[in-house]
Image 1 (cartoon, rainbow, N blue to C red):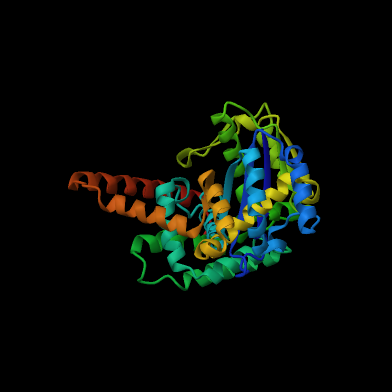
Image 2: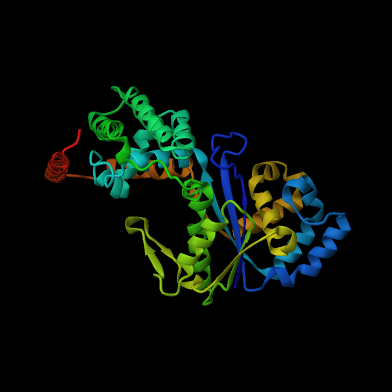
Length: 383
């Protein structure tokens, strides 16, 4: 099987760019190679409309006039679609949380509020409510992408001060403690917290592209498994900036001697077995009908609200969009998605019919965990 990937909304480290608040990565999987199967169809189409290649951003609303031809090519390919969406607001918050509350690096952080998903979600929800977005953006852009270690340390310390200044009675006492302890320790011990990376390629690992790449490979592998097949080749739109990182990640994932599943504990697992020994190639879209088709489909997804709200003016585009959605799977890394999941978790907890005995047992467990944390923290011998 063959997979093709294109991206939209890439702004580098400048994730506070309000003109492109979300990053999208779209992949298609087909048992046919579109670079061969639809090469002639695409050539005839581009010649008929007087362009060298199909680009959604350049064609814009004109996609409506070629929607039937695009649909006919998709019918030939019978593809499955895989969308990965990253909300850059949520990315900034999670990177800030990961840096400050990682209990491995920060002994003032509690194990359960970083390592256990339910506790992490509850504290992150309070943290996001407390911290203004501009603080998270500033940390992401000027600390994680700092040009030197001194700058990274200065931004880290300033960030801790700003957040500590916001902690007041609006938070419950336990949340105040769980948030303030790691902040104070990070401020006093900034060199113990990993923020600065000397190599550009290591700093780029914080970018949305990297957040979506492994989940995309996971979706490809699961698709191939469901069809009792394997992915032979993965083609990604050419990106010199990310090429080295993508090649490295794919090499790890596709290594036949590597694990077929990556265990993420309570977050499930990444399935990689059916992409083992696949070939990875980064290619200019000019030379790839497959990438051009993905580009058009991704444009439709990114403009779904305009298309669907003006259905009568864009019936062909709307039909194409619904075809993609009904044949697709999504990876959601957005603030709205997190808030929905967090709210559901809180409702579930609030609705549990717990007895006084069960509540006391839970309190005893928390107290025991806190005692162990305090004992380990004192052993570290730092302020």
